[in-house]
Amino acid sequence: MPRNSYPTVRLLRGILGIFIFVLATGWMVTPALAAQDVVQFGNAINVAPSETIHDAVCFFCSVNVKGNVNGDIVAFFGSVRIDGHANHDVVDFFGDVKIADNSSIGHDLVNFFGGVRMGENATVGQDEVVMFGELRTASTASVGGERVVEPGWVFWGPFLAICFGIYFLVHELRSYNRRRMIRF
Image (cartoon, rainbow, N blue to C red; front, side):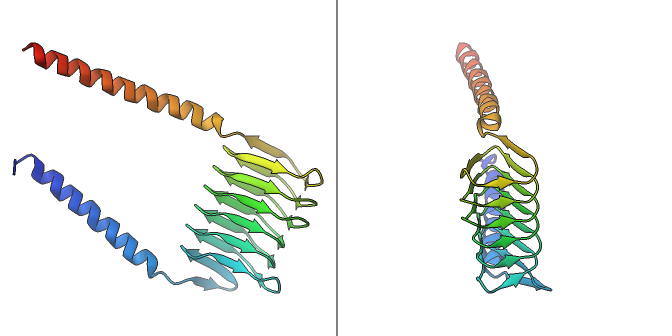
C-alpha cells in the first residue's frame, strides 16, 4: 500500500466510526418529557384529539396535532400537521406545514425550505413567514399579521449558479494542470 493512502484510510475509518456511533445512539434515545413538553428524535409526536401538551420539539420526525398544543411547535427535518389548535408559534426547518380545515395557530408560523398549506377557514393569529418554499392557501384562510413569502428559486438559483461556477473553475484548473504536465 502506498504511503500516501494510509492517512486517507485512517480518516475514512474515523468518519465511519463516528457515523456508526451516531446511528447507534440515535436509535436508543428516549423521549424527553418535562411538564407536558415532548421532545423526540426520530419518532413522530402525535397529539390525540383529547390530549393537550405544552411544547413539542422534533428532530428528524413529524408532529401531528389533532388536540391542543399550548406552547411552541418546532420541527427540524420533519413535517408539522395541525388538525387542531396550536396556541403559540409553529417553526419548521426543511419540512412541510399543513394546517387542516378549521384549524388554527395562535401566534406566528415560520417555515424554512419547505411548503405551507392552509385549508379552509385555517387561521394564523399573527405573522406567517415562508422562506425559500411554497405557500398554498384556501380562499377562506386568514393571517392576522403580515405574510412574507420568499420562493425557493431566490435561494436555489444563486446557490446553484455559485456551485456551477466553482465546479467550472476547478474543472478548468485541473484541465490546465493536466495539459501543463503533458508538455513536460
